[in-house]
Length: 171
Image 1 (tube, helix red, strand yellow):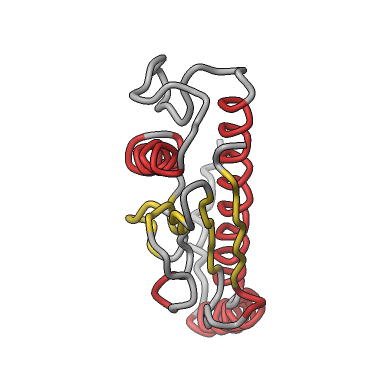
Image 2: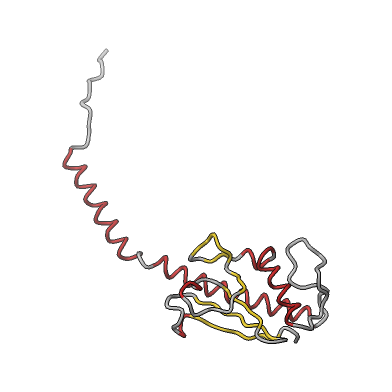
């Protein structure tokens, strides 16, 4: 009976390990250059998507409320009655409902991609200050209209980086 031969332990040499580390370093440097600006592009895309989604949500709720399809608008999930019955007859009524939705309702679920701890929706007449980037701003314009605005990229004063929509809340 033959005993198995003892085999020598095989290991990587220091040179082989150094080559692997250099290759990983080169690949990570190339990756940083190629994908470095992607997070900024993603924030811009999320800000635009938030704005479009929130505008559509406001328009849908106002349409359903003012056309008699629902009795109460802008309610938080699971709530069937609100403080103001449809149809909406004044901007102040809509302002109260939208403000509540921004704080506790559906609109409160949207986050500012530039500061994820903050809700995207806020009552604010400003939209051209760089501090407004990523926010969905709304304000009363007069007795029956609201202004909805957003800035998705700095500088917010650049007309390509923000948008404004005026909506009649009583129609």
